[in-house]
Length: 352
Ligand SMILES: [Zn+2]
Image (cartoon, rainbow, N blue to C red):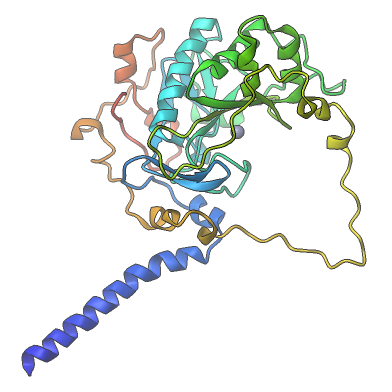
């Protein structure tokens, strides 16, 4: 009798525990996806996996781009959006070295990649949700590392001549800018590079290198102060939704590009019909994302030990040095002096 009641108690306890476990993700699903994902400060401890689509998904097992490298600096650190798929972090590091070799200052300034677990954001960006999108400034990295405040305050520089309609400013745009964008497009793992339509047009008019790579360079609103690199789904990433391939031609005489130079994209929105009830746009909920995203949200954060390469704390380098050698790149880590105090600091990660 006694043992049965004990068993029953045990069952109740198990059921309660199960209830609690099941309840947590459900509660998460009632929040809007941007609130839920915008509140998380560290990635989950799991193998890297993009889940869903660039503009509707999340990311498991992210890694951080260190705030400083020999040929890169991460900008706007307070946004805590320098998390990506390891393939993206690798690509940015490689691109930064190639950029410096092109004569792009001492490397690149990196803007937003993704939130620690990806997902929709409270501000900016429809995409950048699965760790495979990154923004790079049209401003080269200065030789001296900037402070956190300087990285917040540094203004963007537009490549457009604002006194004209959709025209690149020839006083700012150089052949090095062109080579930088085309270098980004040249990597086989890069799916698309988004630039302002005026920049695409300028490249169409001037690029004398491999014209087929221009097909990857896509015109889109904005993207005159930075450009956006989008990677293909990494091999074997079963949960990653692919985007249609880009044309294998330069795509310079396409309707898509010409459209931007018509009045249509710039026309003010038509006034709403006063007889129609306004439709409130539906918020994206966690439950609208791939199922695995609720679990990614609910999962334990990666512990400091797990995020530390080799299990031992790594000494931070406060003076990132250029020029880079592979050995130096191995040794570069985040610089805690540059990170606002409320952001948990990613430690060293394996160099791949
Ligand atoms: Zn972007």
